[in-house]
Length: 178
Image: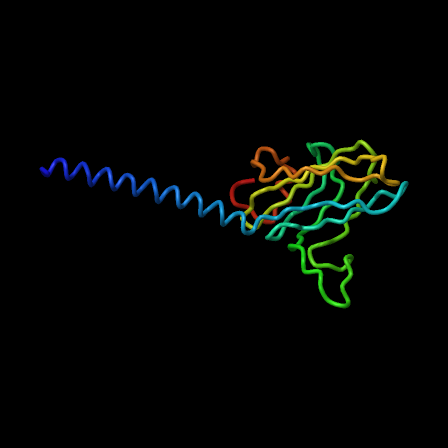
């Protein structure tokens, strides 16, 4: 094999190694982010007409920070329904003194004004890298239940532009200009 062909072969091998390293980095980064992503699940508390509380449970693997609950899409600050500084991941369920209401990773948030069937809400929250996440919920009356419940959709990571600026101002972790 002449030297020109050998140099081309080395360049091709180096390029393939570069692509393999880039793919490994991307997969590693995604796996790392999944290892600490919060995931909030709301649970309706109370009975009509006092539908002014919800329990939030962090089913994810990392803390949820700067938790903001807004009515509709939350375009304006007057649509704020409730907020919380942080919520740890959900704790274990064992032990003789265990009660669900005191479980780590579960807290009660008061909502103002109270929930109304048909209303829609967004729960926006950060992970510890500053990325925003969203859980969407709608208050529904199911025929099988005596009280309203939530229809919940986990929207996942949100682009900065999809989070209202007044909510971003409440960020606890700032990774770029707000």
